[in-house]
Amino acid sequence: MAFPGGSAWAWVRDIAEGYFLLTERPLKQMASPDLDKFQFEVDRRMRDIRSEQPSLDDIPAIQAKNRKIQRLQSALVILQAFRAKNRK
Image (cartoon, rainbow, N blue to C red; front, top):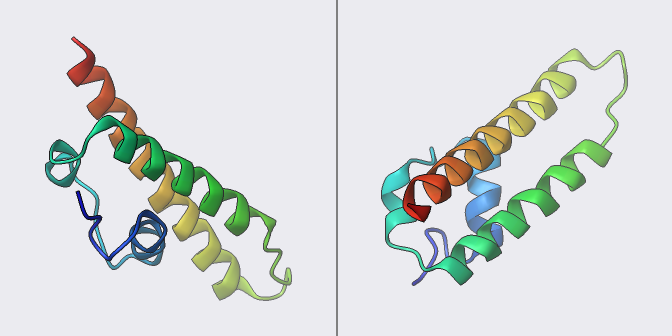
């Protein structure tokens, strides 16, 4: 299955930037190894974003960083809920 955006890394980047809103629909078409790869890339991108330290005076950069983290965290929640639902 091809990831939207070309690769798992590109898809996660698009989600973090707000270009793609994750729902269960694209996840239904993926196999378990693809879901594992997607989760790995989300975790990796979250670590990268958290390691970025904008200046404390740069409020827009701090807000942008927090929005990216929030988008990726919600993608993880959706993925975990999808996996839990399909485990039954």
